[in-house]
Length: 180
Length: 313
Image (cartoon, each protein chain N blue to C red):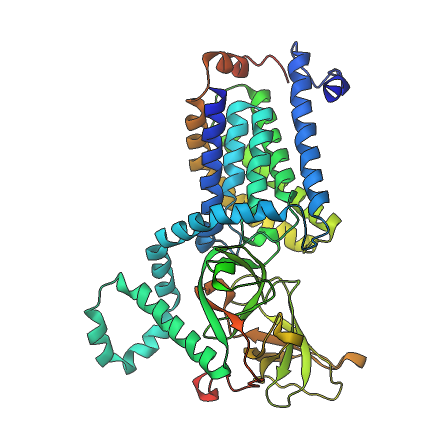
């Protein structure tokens, strides 16, 4: 079950990254592309908790770092998406109730902010091509709006999909609200 | 194991119900490992030297994702063609009156043929530019576009080392200079666009031949402009002046004589470094499709022979 789940998550991430770099830029808003990989990772985190969220976030972010036309220092999106996935998992654990549109929206707003600020932060540290704070905030605003819209469709799909590859024991563990 | 033992004991207020410490520790270990892995990657790659240990990974990713991106781009072609038609509506309305006769003939054509025809025309103009300048050009299509939130303006093209494309080669299209290749794998290459904040090109004013440097601002969309700083203190650019590349030593990364853009406004006189101006590039980076990589530079500098005829613009 575990291997199968990892394989399914991998395929979904590859698909998301491919779409994000080739098809989605054509419908970008003010140049900002929908962060499909990030949304998928948030879905994984919400469905399966912080560990799964952090690991899939790392994998998805690594793909974004390596796949052309990426031209920044590798590891920056990996870190950003891992943090976002972990945060999404924590948000799910806190609530331990079925995830509704409100929670999806809130999670995406928080995770997108965290991921983008982490990415901009590492960029500033490394003096990678980075932008001034105003530009970061503007693009973050556009990205949040765009991502929330997309997440309303994508997150339920991802959660339903990955939920089919969970055992009954997993489900008890996740919904029992035993810890943090 | 060391990390697991290091996991801090759950503190009051963080854990609200009777927590499972083992699971909590495990979770923190995963987070710590993932963050460590990210920082390791960043450290390994931070130098950006040509022999970065991450480069084999990049090449592998490019060889897997190149065909995927190519496929996805082909799949959205019809949608893309539709968008282009909407955007060009205004211009087409004016043109329609002059071209009524030709339109009658065009009506008979299939809708799906339109996109292919547009690309053929683009390729045609590209070849014309290549012929005028004496360049040897490898044609390619844009298959991936960098998002604005990464703050780099880059695109992926579907030509690579197999087509003779190497890093530091000039990329152009029928309108003018697009950018330069920063990285090439067997089947794909990454192009740094003119409008990237890290891009600097040597430019020559067509009218006075005076030299200067053009740098991008990292802007997105069709309104993106470049900053032009003249080297010559006495040179006075005027709005409408046109610029070509003056070429780098050994024709890398930029060959000479490629049209760049037009001066749209002139800045205040700035002390030792001469005048500054704002330049609108001929190439609209948000609407790139067919481009060419200059794999063989011209034998001699074509100067401004490749600039479009002035009446046409």
